[in-house]
Length: 305
Image (cartoon, rainbow, N blue to C red; front, side):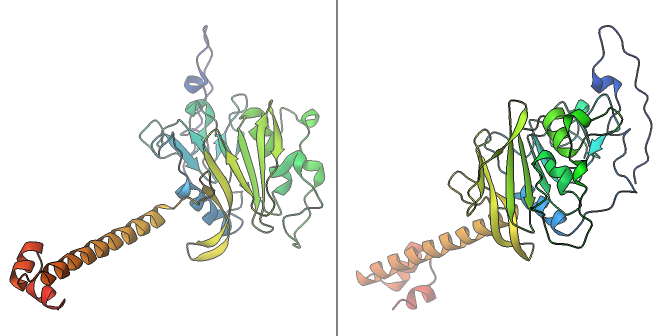
């Protein structure tokens, strides 16, 4: 665990100093809580990897966007110790490294100057109420388990929020961070839900139940459910796609595809070269001349006869 230093909130001046100057940085804030449990299952470890490794924006490259998973996210300048831990998020138009030079210990909004553009929560029986908030339907639980049923009374209501209790995730994403796109996915039921910020409130978007793909026109990228094998594990995974539904490739898949294309190109070039040799032999040219002309060995040309 990273040692925590306690940076005092500095006195304000006239004109006021910015939160970046006066509030704690990621070096001062806790990066983990030993009392919090770890990831609920292996899916919560693998799925964020696939999301990050297939993410390809047209207008942003890996140097000016940041993806994070299960990372403390500090969001409220009035309550600097309040944080959430999104299962996955991406912030665009920020450097990949903190201040362009260091890996992040946490994501501190008043230091970064940018909220995430997309947040994704992976449902589990213990988190579905907070993740879905007012959109939670008790009749549609993520799985039929023996764990305790979430307390429906925990569903956030604006009128019930107080300054002493941190708000639930959906309200943080909607009211505090104003994240344009919020997704919730249950790998138990293979159900994807897309909430888009409209007029300051999330509105659920309609998705095709048989082929649920959400198209994000502002980023020119889609998100859907892909049935396949990732890291040797078959399943139904969230994956990015292009405008016609082609799944975007991971770095490993891109390398494999490039290797296959290179091999096929070499095979095609070799086949064309051998056909040229056959054509020259048919004109009566000597084997030695054909080999010298085409850069082949005499044995390769002999094999054509």
